[in-house]
Structures are given as structure tokens and as C-alpha cells.
Image: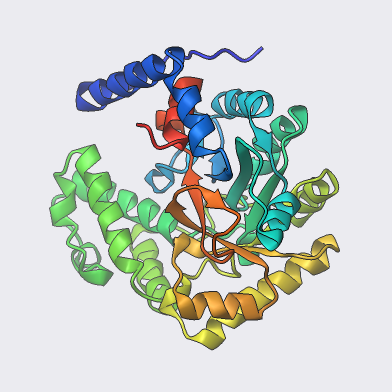
Length: 358
């Protein structure tokens, strides 16, 4: 049995007030029937494509890089149980068929997707998907699968936390901490409270996303060296190819998320084609099935990127722009709705969130 209501610990102050207000509002809408009416109207001929990343217990989330990306397994099970009972669940083939024929989706249609290819998708999400017979598609960052590599965003968080900790204990900083790459002034970070520090690090990460990986990675390597942190000190974060094959044989679809999680609008058209073409070939070789779908890393795309992806043999591609999907939409600009634990722990909040009501 999956309970609809769960206690929330660790929220206080403004965050606690906001959460309580959202919870109260979503429950009021849900139990008054307003949410159900809106769902039937909003999804009368359209589908909602849900975007998940990590499914793992809240107490195991160690890096601030994962904020807004994680769903607790208990929360995920409540959501899948509700979707199975109240939604028309689509497979990737179902979605592709409707997009090709331009035939409207059945009422309350929903597709479940995952980005990146995290190991916890196999450990925690896959058993729940099987239990409730929920179709899903996982978009793989192919160059990370079967490796101990970490995304540069996580490496940046780890390095800056380490440097901040050293600086906090030692006011007489060695020069290597005073002259950090990327114009980062560690003195400006040391005295910040935890929440503000996380915000500042996320802002640094956002600014770095304007550049290709060829410029980002040397900066992050230097930060990691200053912190004494290895590039690979987190262990196995991503799926193994054995797990991918098991999931594929168990009915999970797979698509490409590129080779290196490179933001495609930052690189040349030929590099975009290499990312799309090579990742497609690797996945198809591993699972012995055709790959038809692509997910743009970070959600970034433009007409040139979309053209390149289409030229590489994909039929459909997903971004991160919030919205529903219609059969008449451009199949290379598919909208999705991000799902994370903070505002979806209860079914009323989950529904209000994915429908854009809170």
C-alpha cells in the first residue's frame, strides 16, 4: 500500500511556509474536484511528458548539484501507482505513432522519461516501473554509461565545498586557493551561510554553461586539483551496460542524451552530428534495437541543432521547456514537465505541479 500523505522534515522558515501554502492549496484543489476537472480539460487531446532524473532516498543525496533533480523512491511509487490508475500511459512507440499520424492523444495521456542514465534508475525506479507496468524511456549520456565519470557540475560542487572547508579552517590561505580558475574568489564564499553558498555555486555553474566542454573541463580540473579531489571519487553514479540491457529486455525504451552531455548550442554543427550520430550507434549496438528518440542536454536547442539531430536519423527529440505535447507539435521541440521531490511528495501536489496549477 502506498500512502497519499507523508510527513516532511527539515523545512523551516520561508521554505516551510511556502511548502505549507502549496500543500494546502493543492489539497484544496484536489479534494474539491477542481484538479480533476482541469486535468480532463488540459489533457483532453494532449499528453504530459514527465521528466525525471534521479530516483534515490533523500538522505543519500550528497551534492547540491542534484537539487531539483531527485525523487525519493517512496514518492516515485506513489506517483506511478496514481498514474497507472488514473492516466492513459503511453510508450515511446505510442507517442511516435500519434506524432507521425497527427492523431490526437487519448484523454489523460502520459509518457514517463528519465534523463542522463543514473544507476539509481535501475536500482530504485526500474522495480517500481515493473510493479505498476509503467512504460518509460531513459535517455543515456552515452560517454558516462559503464564508467565512474561524473558530470562537471557535480565535480564543481565537490571541489568548491572542499576548498571552502579548508579555507574556513585556515584563514592564512595558500596561494593556490587565492588564485582559483574562472575568476572565483574563495574569500567571497567562505563566510556565506550554507543556502547562499549553494546559490552562488549554482550561479557559477550557470555561467559556465555558456561555454563548450573544451573550455569548461580545464577549469573544473584545476578546481578539483586545488581541492585535492579526484575526477572519479564518487564511485559508480551511472548505469552499467549490463543494467541497460536488462532494462531493455524488460520493456524499457532507450534514447540518446548525447555522448558527453555537451550543450549542443555551444558547438559546431559537425560536432552536434557527431554527438547525435555516435551516441545512437553505440546504444543500438549495445541493446540491438533501433534508437528513435533524442533528449537535448540541458534542454538547449535551436534550428541548426534540430536539423542536425534529424539528419542523424532520429524521429523525435525532447527539450526541457514546460508544457504539454500535442500530436500536431513539431516532433523535434517536444515539451516536458520536470518532476522533483520537493513539490510532489503527495499526490495532490504532484498533480497540481505537473498540470502547472501551483
